[in-house]
Image (cartoon, rainbow, N blue to C red; front, side, top):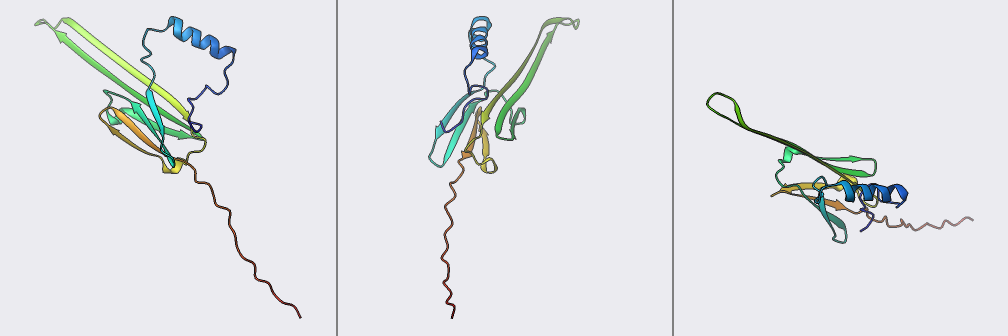
Length: 144
């Protein structure tokens, strides 16, 4: 996928194997802490679509550092119900923090654009354009 690999999965080694085992054995059935993404190659650019339902645009951060793009999102909710005496009948809080990084090798970071609509964050990632070799014609001078 044109070098758009998730951060940390370049070389599979023994630590990755133990990490995968730990994650699959001890983690809950669903992997809720991961931003689900689809990446399409459109020829001159890649389109990255990330699912972030329930987030406000202000809860989402996109950071580019060196050659890495990092998506992060964070939000919390709090609700409570009290009886007539002000004692809690029910009080619930939830907090969610999500983060995912991508390698930008072959991408022009200055041309990246983002749009958020209906829980889907869409990033346009233009590919670096190959520089055409410059050519010029030399004038020949005549010496007498």
